[in-house]
Length: 80
Image 1 (spheres, one colour):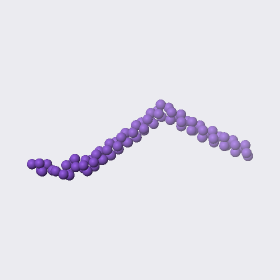
Image 2 (tube, rainbow, N blue to C red):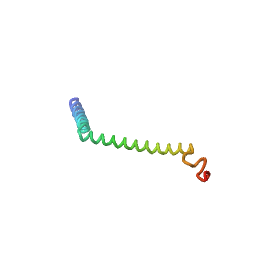
Image 3 (cartoon, rainbow, N blue to C red):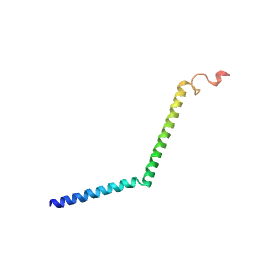
């Protein structure tokens, strides 16, 4: 009975190790690396888009607060 347990345990561990090695080998293949880099490039692109959007929003807030946008202070009619 003990031998069957150890045999089953050895087979199970062997299968799990082979699956992990196969998965790692696929990730390190040129196709796997390409897909990983593509995902990274998309993440960087999304981050840059969010930064640009936040930057534009903050710039408009600062311009409005400083009166540069024409909403505060003198209006064009005041200079006529």
